[in-house]
Length: 194
Image 1: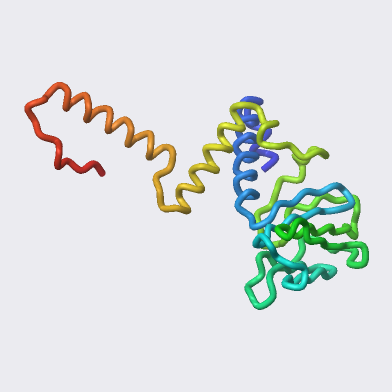
Image 2: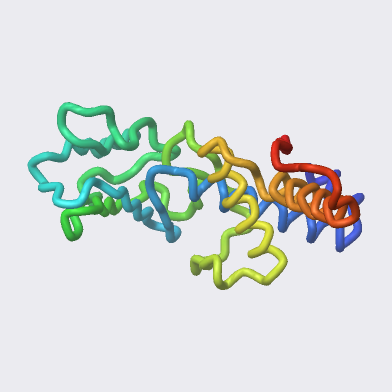
């Protein structure tokens, strides 16, 4: 990968980095939790149904494993941690009866984690900036790319057209309206556009 980047112009490298960052943001936003990290710790926030009480939760924090869910149901998140933690220094709390905040102390406090659970999408740890950035902190072009990818992802999940498909439909509709205006003698009341 490094060889590929060396042959790219600075503009191509920047574009490639922006696309990778946008894809990473979309992948991370699709997870059933939000997470952040510092060199020595990882914080995970898992939404739970409003009104959830602590005794209804089933939470396992082990050296290399994390499971969070409601008793008697499939876990909201669960699996093998990407790195080991200090179990005795790791905690969880229920916040406002609607989110579980999990604080994990890293065993190796000098490494960045690529993901929380090994089977979830990875982040590029070489691009980590110590302070988290928000969508509003991104430059306009990257933010637009991320928002478009997030919108398209949501649309696909709902079985609806993506932004590109919507744009094509709008162009087709405009063309049809122009044609109708040029030919008022034709009846388009039964026309179906696919």
